[in-house]
Length: 95
Image (tube, rainbow, N blue to C red; front, side, top):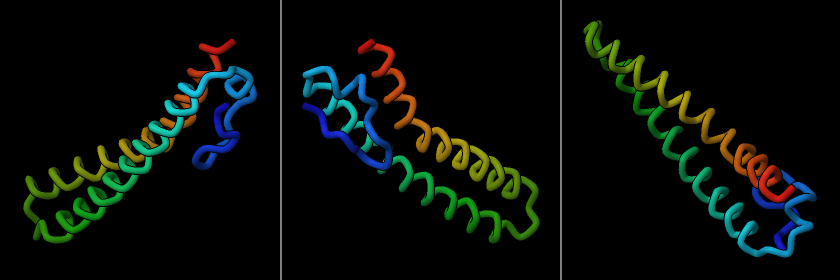
């Protein structure tokens, strides 16, 4: 039986009602990947901020730093939503 709580969200009852450990493993792997992705996104945001601060008015470096910040924030949002997306897909599959 899958764990009732994995990560920061509660596993939907439809997933728990199935007697498959595979679904629990999928949720745990997704949780681990999300944790790693969030850590990487935060590191890239910090790097982008440092790059922006050290650009010294160079338009190309400012543009590069802004793009880095934009895409790292987008990646952070996607990583934070990924756990919910995986849980929703598993609910749809198990119904």
